[in-house]
Image (cartoon, rainbow, N blue to C red):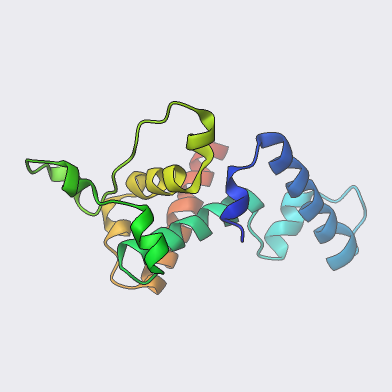
Length: 151
Protein backbone atom coordinates (compact mmCIF):
# COMPACT_ATOMS: atom_id res chain seq x y z
CA UNK A 1 0.00 0.00 0.00
CA UNK A 2 3.01 2.32 0.39
CA UNK A 3 3.19 2.76 -3.39
CA UNK A 4 -0.29 4.28 -3.35
CA UNK A 5 0.82 6.90 -0.82
CA UNK A 6 3.86 7.95 -2.82
CA UNK A 7 2.02 10.65 -4.78
CA UNK A 8 1.07 12.64 -1.71
CA UNK A 9 2.15 16.23 -1.13
CA UNK A 10 5.31 17.17 0.77
CA UNK A 11 3.19 18.51 3.64
CA UNK A 12 1.30 15.22 4.06
CA UNK A 13 4.51 13.25 3.69
CA UNK A 14 6.07 15.22 6.55
CA UNK A 15 3.00 14.64 8.73
CA UNK A 16 3.19 10.88 8.14
CA UNK A 17 6.91 10.89 8.90
CA UNK A 18 6.29 12.74 12.17
CA UNK A 19 3.70 10.12 13.08
CA UNK A 20 6.19 7.32 12.42
CA UNK A 21 8.86 9.15 14.44
CA UNK A 22 6.43 9.58 17.34
CA UNK A 23 5.50 5.88 17.20
CA UNK A 24 9.18 4.91 17.28
CA UNK A 25 9.81 7.29 20.15
CA UNK A 26 6.78 6.72 22.38
CA UNK A 27 5.27 3.32 21.57
CA UNK A 28 8.22 1.18 20.52
CA UNK A 29 11.31 2.45 22.38
CA UNK A 30 9.55 4.41 25.14
CA UNK A 31 12.17 7.13 24.74
CA UNK A 32 11.84 10.72 25.82
CA UNK A 33 10.44 13.31 23.42
CA UNK A 34 13.92 14.88 23.12
CA UNK A 35 15.49 11.74 21.61
CA UNK A 36 16.60 12.25 18.01
CA UNK A 37 14.19 10.46 15.68
CA UNK A 38 16.84 9.55 13.09
CA UNK A 39 18.82 7.81 15.85
CA UNK A 40 15.72 5.84 16.83
CA UNK A 41 14.91 4.87 13.23
CA UNK A 42 18.49 3.68 12.74
CA UNK A 43 18.45 1.68 15.99
CA UNK A 44 15.20 0.00 14.90
CA UNK A 45 16.57 -0.55 11.36
CA UNK A 46 13.61 1.37 9.94
CA UNK A 47 13.78 3.43 6.79
CA UNK A 48 12.04 6.76 6.72
CA UNK A 49 8.74 6.56 4.89
CA UNK A 50 9.84 8.23 1.66
CA UNK A 51 12.71 5.74 1.27
CA UNK A 52 10.37 2.86 2.07
CA UNK A 53 7.89 4.05 -0.57
CA UNK A 54 10.70 4.36 -3.13
CA UNK A 55 11.95 0.82 -2.38
CA UNK A 56 8.45 -0.63 -2.70
CA UNK A 57 7.88 1.19 -5.97
CA UNK A 58 11.22 -0.02 -7.34
CA UNK A 59 10.39 -3.61 -6.32
CA UNK A 60 7.03 -3.38 -8.05
CA UNK A 61 8.69 -2.00 -11.18
CA UNK A 62 11.22 -4.86 -11.17
CA UNK A 63 8.34 -7.33 -10.97
CA UNK A 64 6.61 -5.56 -13.86
CA UNK A 65 9.64 -5.52 -16.13
CA UNK A 66 10.37 -9.19 -15.42
CA UNK A 67 6.70 -10.18 -15.84
CA UNK A 68 6.29 -11.26 -12.21
CA UNK A 69 3.38 -8.86 -11.64
CA UNK A 70 -0.28 -8.98 -12.60
CA UNK A 71 -1.39 -8.35 -16.17
CA UNK A 72 -2.97 -5.06 -15.13
CA UNK A 73 0.38 -3.76 -13.88
CA UNK A 74 2.30 -5.15 -16.85
CA UNK A 75 -0.07 -3.42 -19.28
CA UNK A 76 0.29 -0.08 -17.48
CA UNK A 77 3.86 0.44 -18.77
CA UNK A 78 5.39 0.17 -22.23
CA UNK A 79 9.02 -0.65 -23.04
CA UNK A 80 10.82 2.27 -24.64
CA UNK A 81 12.06 0.10 -27.51
CA UNK A 82 8.53 -0.05 -28.97
CA UNK A 83 8.69 3.70 -29.63
CA UNK A 84 12.15 3.67 -31.22
CA UNK A 85 12.78 2.92 -34.87
CA UNK A 86 16.54 2.81 -34.27
CA UNK A 87 18.87 1.35 -31.62
CA UNK A 88 20.32 3.39 -28.78
CA UNK A 89 22.87 2.28 -26.20
CA UNK A 90 20.89 3.56 -23.22
CA UNK A 91 17.56 1.91 -23.94
CA UNK A 92 18.20 -1.42 -22.18
CA UNK A 93 15.09 -2.31 -20.15
CA UNK A 94 13.86 1.27 -19.96
CA UNK A 95 10.21 2.23 -20.06
CA UNK A 96 8.39 4.81 -22.15
CA UNK A 97 7.84 8.01 -20.18
CA UNK A 98 5.01 10.27 -21.35
CA UNK A 99 5.54 14.03 -21.27
CA UNK A 100 3.59 15.32 -18.27
CA UNK A 101 1.56 18.49 -18.67
CA UNK A 102 0.31 18.52 -15.09
CA UNK A 103 1.63 17.78 -11.62
CA UNK A 104 -1.19 15.27 -11.28
CA UNK A 105 0.45 13.05 -13.92
CA UNK A 106 3.90 13.50 -12.34
CA UNK A 107 2.58 12.18 -9.02
CA UNK A 108 0.77 9.22 -10.61
CA UNK A 109 2.21 5.74 -10.28
CA UNK A 110 2.35 5.23 -14.04
CA UNK A 111 4.66 8.23 -14.49
CA UNK A 112 6.69 8.15 -11.26
CA UNK A 113 7.24 4.38 -11.48
CA UNK A 114 8.59 4.58 -15.02
CA UNK A 115 10.70 7.61 -14.10
CA UNK A 116 12.21 5.84 -11.07
CA UNK A 117 12.90 2.72 -13.13
CA UNK A 118 14.60 4.69 -15.91
CA UNK A 119 16.76 6.56 -13.37
CA UNK A 120 18.19 3.34 -11.92
CA UNK A 121 21.67 2.33 -13.09
CA UNK A 122 21.66 -0.43 -15.71
CA UNK A 123 23.36 -2.98 -13.44
CA UNK A 124 20.49 -2.64 -10.96
CA UNK A 125 17.79 -2.78 -13.66
CA UNK A 126 19.29 -6.00 -15.05
CA UNK A 127 19.57 -7.83 -11.71
CA UNK A 128 19.10 -11.59 -12.10
CA UNK A 129 16.68 -12.03 -9.19
CA UNK A 130 14.37 -9.99 -6.99
CA UNK A 131 16.60 -10.71 -4.00
CA UNK A 132 19.66 -9.31 -5.81
CA UNK A 133 17.60 -6.35 -6.97
CA UNK A 134 16.48 -5.53 -3.42
CA UNK A 135 20.05 -5.74 -2.15
CA UNK A 136 21.26 -3.45 -4.94
CA UNK A 137 18.47 -0.94 -4.29
CA UNK A 138 19.38 -0.82 -0.59
CA UNK A 139 23.02 -0.08 -1.45
CA UNK A 140 22.10 2.47 -4.11
CA UNK A 141 19.73 4.36 -1.81
CA UNK A 142 22.26 4.25 1.05
CA UNK A 143 24.94 5.76 -1.20
CA UNK A 144 22.46 8.36 -2.51
CA UNK A 145 21.38 9.33 1.02
CA UNK A 146 24.98 9.52 2.23
CA UNK A 147 25.92 11.69 -0.74
CA UNK A 148 22.96 14.04 -0.13
CA UNK A 149 23.76 14.30 3.59
CA UNK A 150 27.32 15.43 2.81
CA UNK A 151 26.14 18.22 0.49
